[in-house]
Amino acid sequence: DAGVTQSPTHLIKTRGQQVTLRCSPKSGHDTVSWYQQALGQGPQFIFQYYEEEERQRGNFPDRFSGHQFPNYSSELNVNALLLGDSALYLCASSLRDRGHLQPQHFGDGTRLSIL
Amino acid sequence: DQQVKQNSPSLSVQEGRISILNCDYTNSMFDYFLWYKKYPAEGPTFLISISSIKDKNEDGRFTVFLNKSAKHLSLHIVPSQPGDSAVYFCAASDLTGYQKVTFGTGTKLQVIP
Image 1 (spheres, helix red, strand yellow):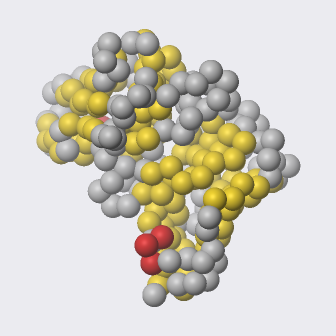
Image 2 (cartoon, chains in turn yellow, brown; image 1 turned 90 degrees about the vertical axis):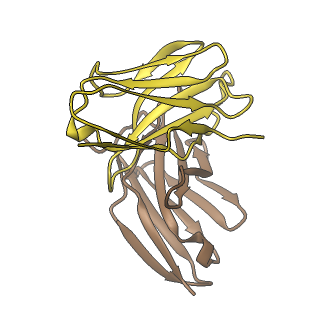
Image 3 (cartoon, chains in turn purple, blue; image 1 turned 135 degrees about the horizontal axis):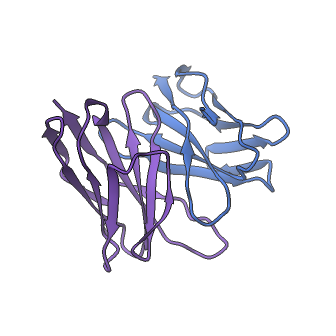
């Protein structure tokens, strides 16, 4: 039973470029959330997707966008990259169980470095 | 505005003793709390949770205590083992069903053999 998988593992980009990160949720999960973890900080919520729609969003600019596909996998897109976007990007999946909160399962992340 | 705070960046404990990790929160809307453990180069792993209707939840060596009036929770690990050495994140959410989770900055626990 595969857990949450993310690709690529590492990525180097330059300022102004665009990047796409990918996530496959744990089998049976239907909800995907994305987090940014800067060095020495805890993960910060970017947004969450359920039924192919963005359901919740954290305090991130519109340069950060996403998508969820019918098979529940998800992409995170970041445009006009800034040096401050260098971070570990974590994907988490869970099963939406009405009225009951299920803990999220995390992937190992994509380390994004901006030069 | 750090709504979930872990004021101790690091903690060292002898093997076999108790580890106590603390967490404070400011948002009164939070009513579900979680602890995650993170090893280097891996994603966070869910450890234990507690809802606001309880003040204690236990799972093996791990116990989480919640003091709602003080907006404080703690994770106790007894007995501590070298394999417990990791970064521990406290996290909180409101029960809207949308699982927007707010994390603390983490406490690095080192268990000394």
